[in-house]
Image (cartoon, rainbow, N blue to C red; front, side, top):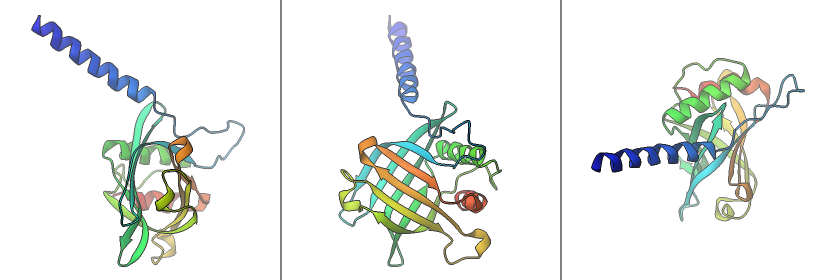
Length: 185
């Protein structure tokens, strides 16, 4: 009887994990008529924690061709007195996100591993971390802003609370390879 209960509990745990994964959205939906679609990704926010220091940590997940992907983003991070964004690895799910981006961008990442943490300067285009629970926050971010042009990249990072979405939107196709380099170990 005890083995039966353990087996039932294990099956329910697996079924719960499969159900949770299947409820995640696909992060990229290309228009088949578009020969070169923008590489825009939308992940579902799993958790969002904001502190009194105007920083918010957002963990988001989704699926790419049925496989789980994820990332952690620290909005309003402070580095040397400057506010910006930190993109952090969520483990294998972030490695899968990097692979998904490379697939959509039709280019290979420098490595298959998402960096532990990468800084980007940011300009807020709309909203703030103080109102992020109810109003969109839209930012343009700059990777390696003070570095060589070959390492410079831009993208948009948005939080849309009405859809519980973290968006990673492409700025320009020319930034694809430098962006993948910035996000890779």
